[in-house]
Amino acid sequence: MLRTDTLGTIPIDALRSDLRGSVIAPGDLGYDEARKVSYGEFDRWPSVIARPADEADVARVIALARETGLELAVRSGGHSLAGHSATDGGIVLDLAAMKGLEIDVAGRTAWAQPGLTTGEYTTAVAGHGLATGFGDTASVGIGGITLGGGIGYLVRKHGLTIDHLLAAEVVTADGQHLVASADTNPDLFWALRGGGGNFGVATRLKFRLHEIDPFVGGMLVLPATPGSIAAFAAAAGEAPDELSTIAAIMTAPPAPFLPAEAHGKRVILAMVAYAGEVEAGLRAVAPLRAVATPIADLVRPMRYTEMFQGGPEIGDVRLASRTLFIDTIDQALAGEILEHLAASTATMTVVQIRVLGGAMARVADDATAFAHRRSRILVTLAAMFQPTDDRGPHQAWAESLARSLRQGEPRTFVNLLGTEGPDWIRAAYPDRTWDRLTAIKRRYDPTNLFRLNHNIPPAAGTE
Image 1: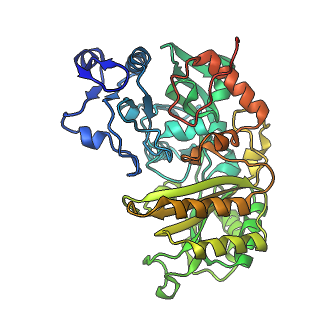
Image 2: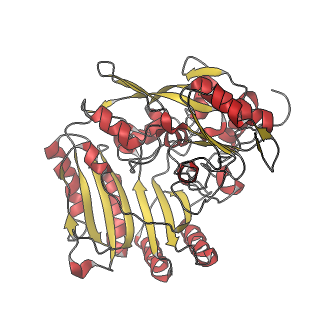
Image 3: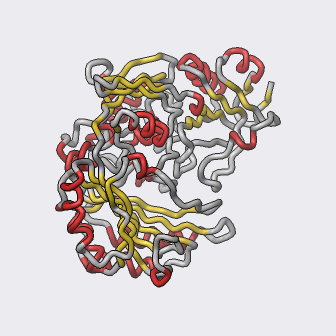
């Protein structure tokens, strides 16, 4: 047995005997690699890492956390900006081995397990000319991004990831294996779509699939000025629903696809995705190209999977960030963004803009736990700095720019929250949504076993 220095005792040998999956404990070969997550800042040492093979294994690990009182970290892909995929002295439930995928091509649906990454899922279903919209990074686990909402390259055409979700199989805090859908446990299904991992561990997710061929996409790089930033946001908002964009305002890197004279200059580096006919897609992209003379134009007919290839390696850096929904970007606000970028002392500073609307906004606000559907733009501010740097100035930079950008009551998005704290978690949910979520939390997790997340505590009182 491994005696923990926290609350309980973990019977490692018994756990190994009980699980079909694997158990990794301190001192085991591979423990140091298994405890790592995507962000080096969260260098944590769990008492045990369990990699379940099926829902019975998941239930056994949940029971272990319930019996010992130890903190439980549930990991899909390990990309939590708040470090929720790791724990010091607790239990990591690592779903990486659960990669089952059943594709019903005729029915346009797929059942997927949460150990799959968005890249693995996207590549597999693309072999049939189909897709489900996730985010913009191939290495993210489908579990976390789905339960938080999911805003990606198909958001204007097909909506959020949760708008593709048809059902989920969930192991709850008391070990029950439930199905959640519009017809079965509909309260749980409502909460899962935007409420994150607060209500149980999703062991299978059923997604709707959409035809994705033909497709137009790629990178468009424009000079960043107050006028070009405002014009780009306006053009992206006025585009057909088939066109979605994710644009980063940043300093141009010394990339081979950029001319040398652009290196070190402020640019709009936009990923452009058009889900539809090629000629219509090229026409839809034209207003974006007309914003300013492109520095680089890599937009072309392509396979959807190509949108998830590549990406910079940023190494072991720290991140100070803020994420908020706003409704418009004019030249004055764009000027604020550029001034803040110029003032930052971080290794790399990025302001990412996702223009929304379309299918996402046509779903009723109360249809899912994600309720900010009328918000027009999602902005993420990120300052990446070295581990030896003082976090204070970089966090102050992000908070200052967030205050400058804020429009109306604070609104944010749980998928991109870091360690901002309870006030920002509340900003992800309007009051009526929050009250409903806390009531559902009380029903399915009254002791708040699933608390290592952007936590929604159970409502007080009786049901």
